[in-house]
Length: 202
Image (tube, rainbow, N blue to C red; front, side, top):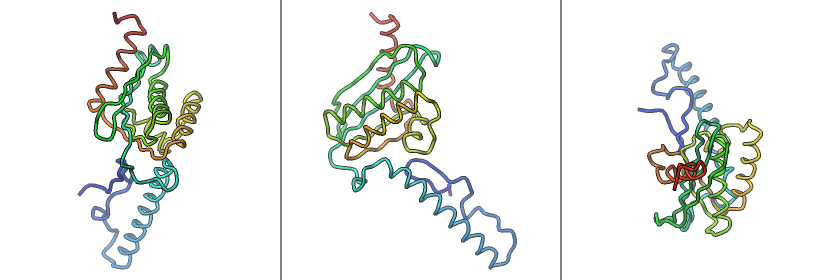
């Protein structure tokens, strides 16, 4: 049986209870180790869940009936290099609502990823509904927005702050990581933006 996993894919660093090798056969010692493990696991999961819950405004944790789904992608050829992003917005039924893409000049991959996210957030804030689920193939971006990873780069700190400010203006927000093969249309839009900006597209 696999280790316990949070809804966002996070797993504890230590082993699951049924795979722990107890140091001796003494029942009291085994129970003590078991309770210590359970306490540590519960505490860690509580901290992780509270960080994730911080993405949502108070009282709006449940997914609403109507919301947008944004598939976002950003890239830079050379990293840094010619960069661009692509965004595909759908409603909760999967109907395409809008697409966005832009050439960003000479930038990093992470800069482009954040610009794609901010574009999706701005669309939700301006057009509604003010409820948004973001799907990104950037694990770094997702974990930084969730508060699992710290943002150290000065430029990304500004973009991260802008994203969090926009999230705070929504009634509901969620962000998840997906592999690139599940984000193909946004990836294509990002590449088309880069091609156009580099003069490769007629």
